[in-house]
Length: 371
Ligand code: GLY
Image 1 (cartoon, rainbow, N blue to C red):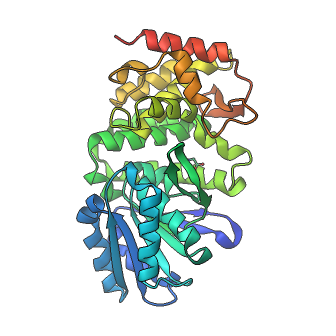
Image 2: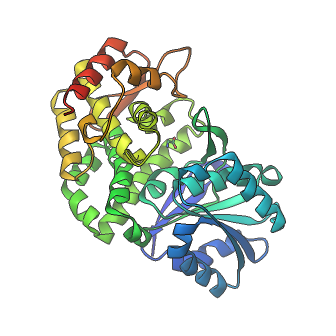
Image 3: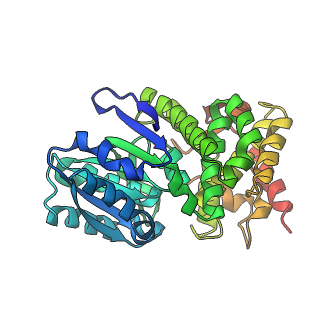
């Protein structure tokens, strides 16, 4: 039996099932949602080659017919042209208001297909079948959907909750070690922001989990989803507490922009480095002890993850340049950056009260450690 986490949002509540055979059980879980036995599946070509057959076999076994659109793999797909293509394909497929669209893939596909579902016929239901660790623990849960704009990432979108999430942890076996570790950056984030005991657990179990232990993988995804589901249930549209989920992200977004959203830095790697920088900033502000950032970095290094600016290859802007990029973050309100700072591991909070000089000194020191 899979583990189940409920996202409690009244009439829009839904289950996240987490287990090692969910692609093969998809027909069973999706059948109760259907008003007629057919679905439209949107994927990317890479994920479709690996996982579409397992999904469609199980749909067919449950008597569900399906059609599929496979888009190119990669962040560039999260854009107007592919949104147009997806929506027009769904219309050609005569997807009706009562039908279900399935998003099979990582964060790019989940965000794009969720947004297409939000605007198609003023909203159709969709099911997330996340295949990357990042999507299983973060982007498939909570209803943030959208595409990127020339002006920045995720600037166009809508809150549109899925009707079901099926996180098959066996699918994680097809990720490259680098992609797996990048997703793990988001897992660590949960321990750091709100659950010190989970961070302890990750320090103990992280290496075995990365090596492939399935029970540990399920448990890490379950605990991450549990925390995200609880936060989303209390603050669906990010009026307050949900912002905690952006721990490390202000630094991360600046670093992603500085590296041109390229392979030099994956999103989850930027989150991990951003978390380390957020703890370093918190320590300099006297909010937490100096041991806290050291412990964060030690765990990231133990997991063979990027932990410092020196782990990013190639040129980076100076601290002024990085701060200018941070100011373009969509979390800027009235010209002030909102930061997530921490009083300790597992105890993060939102503040706009972080002096620029402190951020500058953290970045200057971090940059000076680069060769
Ligand atoms: N990834 C942050 C959120 O869903 O709020």
